[in-house]
Length: 350
Image 1 (tube, one colour):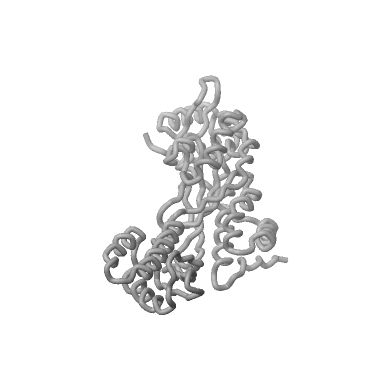
Image 2 (cartoon, rainbow, N blue to C red; image 1 turned 90 degrees about the vertical axis):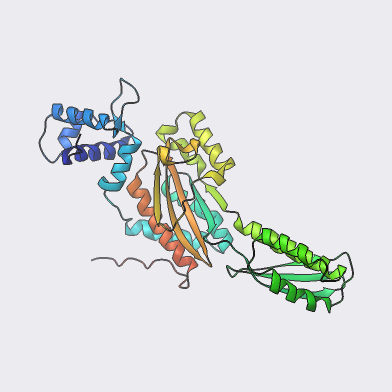
């Protein structure tokens, strides 16, 4: 069965209306909105064909037809009219970002909550490493016989340090032998490789020096483990309660609990696509099978990217969500970039 231009027009009208009202649209109303004059009977036949092809579904026999996940996918890929946010909303987003997002850690943690306030949907923000971090260089600073500062420079340009308290007294000269061992044998390795390597050096250093070596390697391995973990921040989960599809409180609470208790399972797409839309069954997690997720990525720098995702019903306004997320992602990239500025304000037309 062919998916004709008329069928696509009918599907677009139906999806647009359902996104706006959460109510099925009858064949007469569809016929009145079509560019070409057609009868209600013709529209009913086309709706039956679209249902048979899997683009529409009828959850209840007494209810009208609504888009299926397949129908939404065709709509997003081919039929949806792309949107841009208007100047007033862009100004409001810029002002909010400049006011609320200060400092990298705070910025990432608060991004989800801030985006949710503009979306009216729950959101989440993620920091993700494009590459696995390793240690680029070690430095040791002598404090006293029982204290040493370990400085670790990571491959993503971050520098971490800690004060190590030693059980055995240590001479300052010992650092001159331990530091070269660290930089010769333990840079560019994974944490597993570090632990395996240190066992080969037990006979090459004095006991008190080996203790220091072991402590520094343990600290570096813990840092690598920490950097490999994706940080997920959820915001605005209670927005679900405003959405008609989640009037069933049990259904709303199940999704809210999933977002708060299983946030690590929220979609984190691979690759560098600026935006991805996952509709219903396209989501891996069972808890999201009746929801859609729109995820945009932005560049943090130093081999890291950020993701901000919106979770909502399959009936969500994909065009509006995509436009706002694109603007947020562009703004966040510029905030983290060398320019350290938001997108320029649009010029007002007379």
